[in-house]
Structures are given as structure tokens and as C-alpha cells.
Length: 119
Image 1 (tube, rainbow, N blue to C red):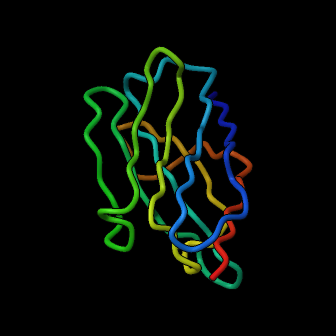
Image 2: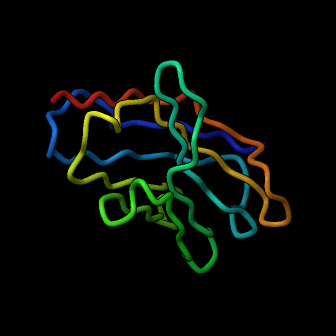
Image 3: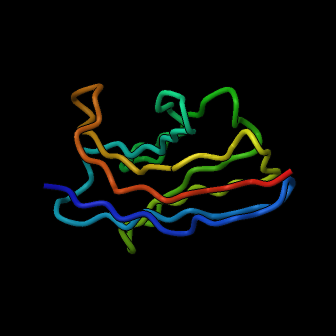
């Protein structure tokens, strides 16, 4: 089992920055990939960014490329999402997730953290 707990959400203004954290516990993560997803009111959950725990390769949704950066601290078992130049359309509940690198679906999810960006 993998346990995930997000933190760092809040209310900010357009153009501000925010950093989300996801503390991971319960399993050795070398064979896992981590992801950040978000869900805005009335919309489907969407992929935001992902990172391979081993090697640190990253990938992003087009909507956040150049503004968001995903990273991980192996020593702290923590994944981060640095969000810059925030827009009102970034408002959503943000979720951290984990999956084995041998599969495409994410099996483990955190409870989410709310990010609200005012105009």
C-alpha cells in the first residue's frame, strides 16, 4: 500500500505562485511513477504532471507547460508541484497519485488539496 497526503493549497491571486507537496509513505518507490491531477467544479479530473521516481523524468499537460514544475525529493519521500503564473482556470482540487511503472493506471490517490486562483 502507498499512502499519499497533499498540502500547500490555498487562495491566491492571478499571477501568483504556489507550491504543493505530497508526502508519500508505505512502500519503496523506485518502481513507481507519481502524478498530479486536478478536478475543477463540474469537470472531469485531468492529468497535470508526472515524474518517474527513479531517474526523475517528467512530463506535463500542455495547459501547464512552462508554468508548472514537478519534482521529487527522494530523501524526504515527497513530490512537489511548483505552480507559477497561476490563472483563474487553474482553480481546482489537486490530487497526488502513484502508479507502478508497469501499468498505466494510477492506483493510489491522496485526499486532495484545494487551489483557488482569483482574478
